[in-house]
Structure formats: structure tokens, C-alpha cells
Image (cartoon, rainbow, N blue to C red):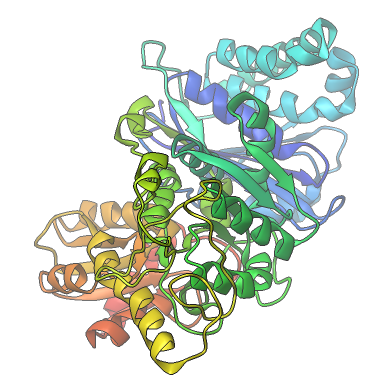
Length: 584
């Protein structure tokens, strides 16, 4: 039978190439007209430790990974030991025939398929490391997926290594597909390609954000590598020459943000990708951007803390930190995209907001959104929507007509002072990390301090009109509303669909993607249309709940939190809601 939704999971030790092969298989499925949600799971070590990659595939759009596994590709026995409980009845476990499978790992309702993975990879490809490619080819044969698409990915991925390497991998794919087909009779789940489907994109949140930032005019990127934000630096480094982006691998996070502030000072749109630990080192420089009114964008792909925490896991623990980071008071934006599409939009929109209000903008992603691959429609990344707004940036012609001294920090009703980049003889100015007067000179007088603080804080009036309120998904008149922010959107959305499949029109959700300044009026209006609410977020203290109480005096009817380093699944949210219902 054809499956409507299935998950293929490959597992083994770190260093076996699971992420690259999983990404390649995800691309092949997408080329075959299917939708994919691919999620890597790995320990923070170079060798050793159990890694796995889950590829969920369906003929309809997907927004999350899921718990049931239909095909388990085990490159070692540890994979079976850890994941056999997730395999659905009738599912398949592909493992190396050289392994002696212990009795305690057997399940009567699962198809165990011993295949000489190592021997076959060495025979057809010449290297045992090609077991991962072989295993995915076996899966393709098992589910009845056209191998042509997998072969096309192999050609693209290995072309730079020469035809001999391409041919070796193609032989491995052919052998794997043939082997998988031999087990089809005992396997009830099939997922055939849709050959006439339109071409689609598959990318993760890091890639989508980087594309959006580039489209928005980003021309300077500085970073010190820190998982899971590092791939944004890698992406720009790979495309720097093609698109004219200066990309700097700084000596540390402090150097990175100060480089970006310097680049923004002279007019470049500047970006700093990092994670929570790196952002912690940047907070004094964040204050420098605040007091000098320098537009800079910081991308914080969150991971569990404190300190080093869990470098390759996910959490939403930095929200209140980034809202209040750095000493003193100054305005900033905090955006929290929840999907690939929103990550792209945040990429270019952040630079417009930074320039328009001459203030830092922090984009909060997290490991789950950053690294998970998802299939989207070609027009999902709305390049036509991209605009570039430099705000009150004076042109050379404006400066030619300037009379009197240029006052960089001129007190205005909006709080936004006309900005000039260095180089024009009529706009020679200085700035400092100290409090300063309109000309930029250090000034500690009380009247000046009040005037400059009030000027900066008046920006919040305009900023409050820029932030967007929560987006509703699901029927407007619902008994239960889930409140979520950032990457919890995908699992929460699918949980809503599952709940409504059982009780028509029972649940919906409100998803927050702009969190500071907090969208008070839009949130109040949205909450007035709810009956009962549960907040779903990936932290231990309920940080969105804190914002709701602080700014609206609103207390939700319940909460679902996860902070074990893993992302929510739709099944987990659905089950937690049902347990809450049963206890009331």
C-alpha cells in the first residue's frame, strides 16, 4: 500500500557521514515530487557517540519531524537498541548481516532485514564508508521510490571528485535498490515518486536566513564559530566572492561584533551569527551599538545553556536574556522566526528595521529550526517582497546642502537622528561609548543625559508600530488555543491538525514571531478571541508566559514545556494536551 506519511531513520557512530547522506536522500525525495522534513541528531564530539538522521516524507507539506519510524537503517547494533521501540508494527529494520542480533532486540511485529552492508559497499564501491549511501538506496528500493532521483543527487554531489567516484557511488545505489526491492513483499509501506510535480526547494533555517540577509543587502559578516550558528558563517564564506560580501572569521565573539559595528558605522549592512554563549560575550558591545545608535543584526541560533550547555541540542532559553542584554536601557528589536519561510523574511527585514531605527536587531533561531531540512514551494521565499530601506540615511546631495554643524545625535521628535556615513567633508563627526551630546562629544551633564536617553527611547513609539502580532492557524472559533513562538510553530501546527481530526474545529494556535517590542495591542486583540489557552515553549521557566503576564497581566490556562535538549513532536504535544484534559 502507498503510505501517506513515513519516517526513515539512519543511525550509527559520529563520523559515518549520516548528516551528509541524510541531506542527500532528502534532496532526492524532494526531486521526486515529495515533501520532506529531515532532522539530524548528533552529539558534540568528533568521533564516537550515537548519531542519527530522520527523514520524514509525505506527498503533502510537512512542518515537523514525527515519532513513529517505518524504516530503521542500522549501521550498528546501538541504533537498533536505541530506536527499536519507535519502529511501527510492520516496519523494517535494515542491519548489517555480519552482526549477531541479540534476542532482546527482536520484535515479532517488525521485519528484520539482514543485508551485508559493509561487504556490499566494499564490493561495489570499494570503501566501507559508503554503507550510508547503500543503506539509503536499500530504503529507496524497499519503499518503491524511483532511484533515478537518488542517482541524480549522487552525480551532483560527487562530480567534483571525478567520474570514478561518481561511478562507484552509482554502483552502490544500484546494488542497494535491488537489495531493497527483494524485501518489498513483506513491507506494507510504499512511497512512490510523483514525476510530474513542480520543482521545489529543500533547505534549513540557517540557509533560509542567510539567503534573506543576502537579499536584504548584507555585505559584511563577522563571527567566531559556535554551533548551531556557524553554518551561516560557512554559507557566506562559500558565497562571499560571488556576491561581494566581506566575511571574517574573527579571533573571538567580542572581536566579531566589534568588527560588525565598525562595518555598520561606515554604512555596510553587517551581520553577526552566533549562539547563546557567543552572544553572552557580545553584550557589552551590544550596548556600544545601542548608545552609538549603530544598526547591526545579530543572529542567535539558541542551544541549551548555561555555559557550554548542550552544543548540539535545542532550546528556547535565551528570550528574556536577549531582550534585556547589556547594561542600561536602549531599544532593540527581537524577531523569532518559526519556519524556513519566516527565517528568510527575517533575514532581510532585520536590516530594514536596524537601519530605520538605528538600533540593534536580534534574530532568535534555535538548533531545531537552524539545522532541520524542509521542502518548500519555489515561491515560499518571497524575493519579490524584499525591500531595502536605509532609513534616515543622508545622501551626498543632502550633505552638500547642509548648513551649520552636522549633529549626528540631533534630538528629534521621533528619536531618529539623520545619519551620515564617514567620508563627506560636511559630515565629520565622532562618537563614543560614553554618553555624548548631539555632536558626539562626551557630555555628562544631567540635562544632556536626559535629552539623549529620552531621544533614544522615543524610538520605541515607532518600533511598537513595526512589530507584528501573533498569527493564527486553525479555526477562529476554537475551544482551545495553543500559544507558541519560534520553532515550536511546526510541531504545534501539526498537533492542532491532529486534535481537529478527532474533534472538528476544537483547536487552533497563535504563533509569535515578533517578540520585542512586545506586540501588546495585537496580542490583546488576539487573546480576546480565545476561550482557553495553553503555552507551548522549549524552556523550563515559561518565558513567553512571563511576557504575557508582564505586558498584559494575562495568565494562560496551562503550559507545556520541554527542556531536555530535544524538540517537540506533534505526538508529544497532543498527548500532553489530552493528559491535561483528563486531569481537569
